[in-house]
Image (tube, rainbow, N blue to C red):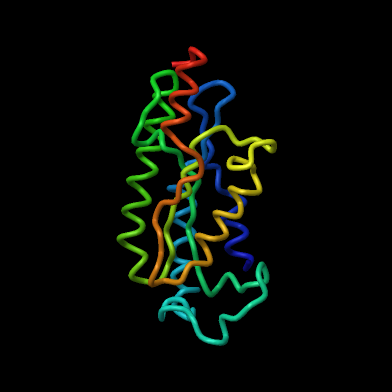
Length: 172
């Protein structure tokens, strides 16, 4: 990371709080400084030309991130299934979804990968589906996809099951 990008990162104060104990980071500010950098990386990236080829044969986990410049966001199914007790967070997630759709339309033609991982449940170490490592693996999988098979949204967990579990516990 060059010095100018490090400086922009250190100045980013994009976190906001919608409720005590609940913090959410806005993707808008990082997208403003990140997208020009990612477009520059994509202009010299094999993945912009469709990926593949022997030069892409890499040991798993050792890839060159310049080959697949990506803007990835963790979201949630509450953007399309809002939950009344946390309606303000549901609104934020819907706004993030709209922002990502706009970024996708603007920057994917330039070779920048734009995607969201919807984490539909409570992240817990003891949950095989919702473990932090599983979520990280899914983000990595999104980043490693070839340009001709990009997915824009990947779901981890089951939003409908989460809603039913919350209802059963009297949370909603």
